[in-house]
Length: 518
Ligand code: HEM
Image (cartoon, rainbow, N blue to C red):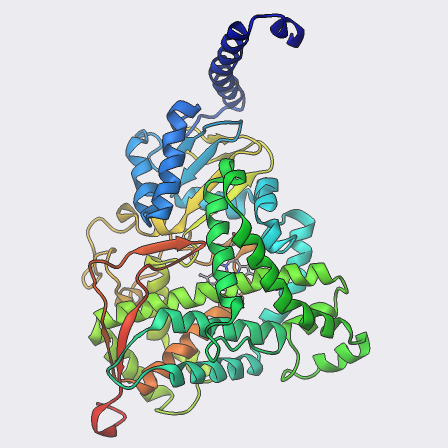
C-alpha cells in the first residue's frame, strides 16, 4: 500500500492521505456503533466523533479552564444532550479515545462501586500524572493501588491525640497571623499555609512552617505543579504541547524538600521503628510507611500523593465555609453559641467535643455540597463495560480505554435531584444553608464529596476533624466576621481542587469590651 502511495505524484499523495483521514473517522464511528450494538446497548448523547466537530469543544474546555468558567462549560454540554440521555454526553476528537462526561448519580455509583473493577485511573492518567505522583495511591489501579492503600491506611484509622496536637499548634499559629480585629486579610492564603503546615508535620514529623515563612520556595513550586497538572489533565490529547519547564522545576523543588526526611527515616532500623510505633507522640506517617517498605521511591510517591490530597482540599473547604459564614451572620452566631456552650472560650476541643457539635458538621457538609473540593474527576474503562441508562432505556456502552469524566460539583448542584416542591424550612438548593441538614439526608450517591466505594477518601475523618478544629478555634476567638470582597465578582476556580477565585478577603472581629459572649 505504502509503495503504491509513494509512486504517485505529491499532489495525489496529499489527496490520498487526506482521503484516508477523512474516511477514517466515519469508519471508526461505524465500527464503534457496531461494537455497541453487539454489546446490546447504546451510545450516550453524542456531541462529536471527529476533529471538525470535536476540536471546538476541546479548545473551549481549555479556554474555559483558563478563564475559570469550567462549571458553566461543563453544564452547557448537556444542552445538546438527548431526552433519552440528558446527563451524559460523548466527545471525541483525534484518536480512538471517547470521553463520556456525566453528572448522573447512578453513573458515579456504577464507576465507584457496582463496576469498580471495570474502571480505574488507567494508563493515560498514570502517564500524565506520574512525574508528580509516581506510582502512588492516586495514579495506580489493581494490586499496586491496593498495596498503596494498605500502606497509607493505618495512619488514618485511629483517632490519634497527636493529630489534635498538630491541629492545635498550627491553628494557634494561624490565629497569631491574623491582623488586628476589624482589619482585612485573605484567609484563603493563610489557610493554604495552615493546612500545608499541618500536613507536612503529620507526614514528616516536622512542619514546613509556611505560616512563618510564606516565601518558602516549596509553596510556589507546589502551586505551579498543581496548576500545570490540571491543564495537562484537561487537555489530555494535547498534553505534549504544554510547556513543562515550571512543572519539572517545581517537582524537583518538592523532592529536594522531602528527600532528607525520607533518608533520615530509612536510616532507622526496624527495631527503632517498632519502638517509635509504640508512642503516638512521635510516630509519623513516614515512620509508619518505613515499617512496611524500604523503597525510597515508593515512600516519595505516597508522600506527594497525601500532600496533594490533604492540603488544598481542607483549605478550600474551610475558605468556602468562612466565605458563606460571612454572608450569613446568624449562622455564625449560632455556631459560636454552640462552640462556647460545648468547649468554652479557650480550651482546645477534643474528639468528643467535635462529634457533639453537629451543627458545625452540618455547616461543613453544606459547604461540601455546594463546593465539593474535588469538583471534577475521571476514570478510564479498563475493559468494555456499561453505565445504566435512564429507567426503561438501554445501558450506555463504555468501551475499553474510553474515559468517563464525572463532576460531583455539577451533580450536587442539579436542581432536579432535590424535591420539586421544597419542604418547609428547606432553602433553595442553590443557597448555602446548614439548617437543611437538620431534617434532611441526601439520597446516597447524590452527595459524594469524598467519593464512595473502595476508593473513598482515606483522609475523610482526618479532614473533617482538622476543619472542625480550625473553625472552633476561630469561633472561640471572634464574635463576628465581615466579607471585604466583591460578592458578585467571586467565582469558582478549579485547579484539581475548587477554590474561591478571588481568595476570601475578610475581617474578623473580637468581642468588644473583652466579653467572650456578645
Ligand atoms: C475536604 C477535604 C477532602 C475532600 C473533599 C477529599 C476528597 C477526596 C476524593 C473525592 C477522593 C477520591 C479521588 C479519586 O479517587 O480520584 C479522595 C481520595 C483521597 N484522599 Fe481525600 N479529601 C479531603 C481531604 C483529605 C485529607 C486531609 C487527606 C490526607 C491527609 C486525604 C487523603 C486522600 C487519599 C490518600 C486519597 C486516595 C484514596 C484512594 O485512591 O484509595 N484527603 N479524597
